[in-house]
Image (cartoon, rainbow, N blue to C red; front, side, top):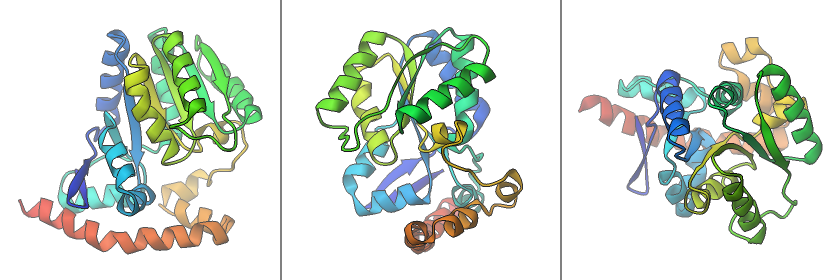
Length: 250
């Protein structure tokens, strides 16, 4: 399944969780790094608005579907993909890391939230090693000196799994740079996933997610910030539906 923006494609190349986990196991075994991104409509909007972010996304090694609309578009195209929100991938990836004796790094959010996420993860995943945690400054620039410092330390840590909770496009851009500066590190961009673990952000209840209404729950919880964002997401849908029908027709 792929999406077209500015005449270029962004593909969901990991359509199933079993495939993703097999790929990550293999990379852990060979000490090969990766950059994992979770595409959703908001990311497509950002790619439409900034071609630099589109280039960053095309540089990610592994891309999964984060959001029901992405899954529904794949149904239209008859190229079905599974729903794999970044928030839901934190624990499974940590279990894979623990099994492979690969240490984990938490980067992003706040120091308090990261400490709470660390406690939650070590309690939930026996044998998990958290190598270090780091909350960047409020003015963090993935292309600046602070980004350099994080990537240098990751490179010195050796093969590890680094969760990036910096928000898009900062987390994906840092992962893109990390593939060159810390090639043995696996980067997973998970947005608010670490904040959810420690209770610093509240996620929609499971029953709301089950009926595909998480977007409405979030919009009502913060309408000033999120309603304009969701408006842009709706605006980009017709073009992507057209692309999906073209894929189906091939």
